Length: 443
Image 1 (cartoon, rainbow, N blue to C red):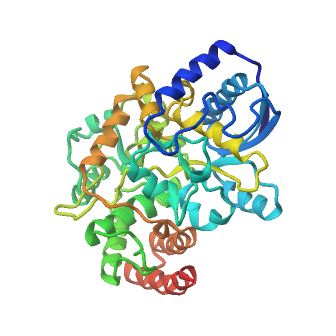
Image 2: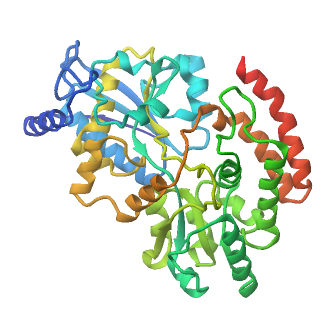
Image 3: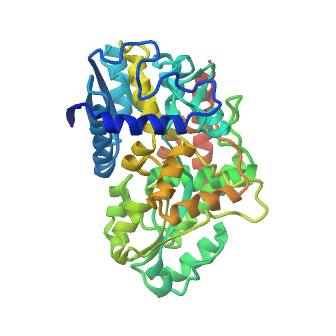
């Protein structure tokens, strides 16, 4: 999908913008040197066209389109061509565009692609138009910076939460204040399925199985990331086999919805008929997805609880992440103008009210305060982040979320789920395939 916006002047709104940016100034060395996006070393009246691409659902698309409209009204010399789609294929398309010299000026980005796209991205630290004073330093360190550059302006912060259907819990007598562990998840799930063969305590697609069940389960045993910084697995065969055995038992005991039923809803589990009908009790997903699950449950009866934690686990494996944001094509002829637009999106209070939490809870303090003051932030979302913050965790590393490593594990996981391999065989297969891939990635 593609739309183009061309704004008109709005002097009154510009005045408001000036106040907003002044308020989010502060003591950062990277605070913008000009207000209202006026040129930090450029001509603010020069006609500029920016191509901006992102992925998301329709709610995010509409919010972003409104933000573009508002920005171009403030900056009538700027035209922004909007290119938006779902997540599937976005990564490959962007890589193809870089290879062909047709990449957009700015785009939505995730730190998971740092290693793959680093060479194509502008170092935002060199720009005078991005105010970083509203970011927590750990967010910049862990998610915005890679190697020697700041390549992403984080848009939102999030963490994984346990979403539960309150009516389902009432039906099966599950206390809403349950402190979830992997063990009681299994035991309660067994009881639910024994009571009703059509009911499942939990559902998950392949991404959730790999990233939000297997990886945290193993991380809570090892206290480490999935992959060490030296490109070696942070787990041994025994730990991985234990994690795979647990996963296999979830399916065998009817705790997890059959994979054949849930696999049709990768990334869109809110559309799963069993979830909508109240036949599934729990989903794991990022807290920023709260609204879509709430809207899909009759009566909006959706609760949030802390992520399962093994007793005495050294860490949760569930850090607060600022994994997505915006990046700029370093070959863009209008790179500085692209940074100005990004600065407005992440720092300006009016932009925050338009964009809401469509890319996670705003990563900057100014944007968060704008939503809190306007009561646009559901208290359950704040609760989810607070619960995650209380659990011990460590900062994630990029190699642990490498797409090739993920695919290797997912291939073996599906063989395990369909009982074509035992946990021991799947663990052996994953470790055997990881060795050459990690060696290649390290070079």
